[in-house]
Length: 170
Image (cartoon, rainbow, N blue to C red; front, side, top):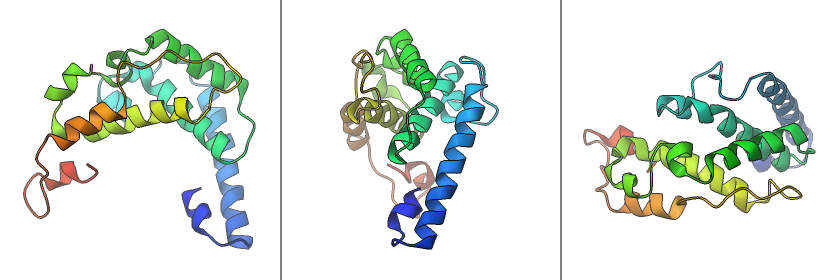
């Protein structure tokens, strides 16, 4: 839908919105049939970091975000499922993103981008009111500020130096 946000009002924007609504509904149907804790049918950052138990949560938070962004009603089963997963983790980032605040210091720089995106996804979900009208999830051990502080403490490799690719999004 990001491209739709940039499109001027008119048929093209309407078509992009229609496509985004259709895709969001389809992905929601697929997610609903996937048992929480089971591996997702496609590759994910959570699985790459060895957190396959969190795959459903991150897919669910993404789906909730698009429902909210597109003005759709949030599916109760999805909100409740995400809340249950967040409550199960108890705000422990070790369980959600694979490291503690202290552990961020030893995370490979190439993994910081993935952790940054996961922390941002969880924190954005809490801050933007995706759980409005429901019980609030537990507070997180750490947030995006701690990840960005760790990013700033590391040297930035600029192109065309070797290792630049892994720093591209940092």
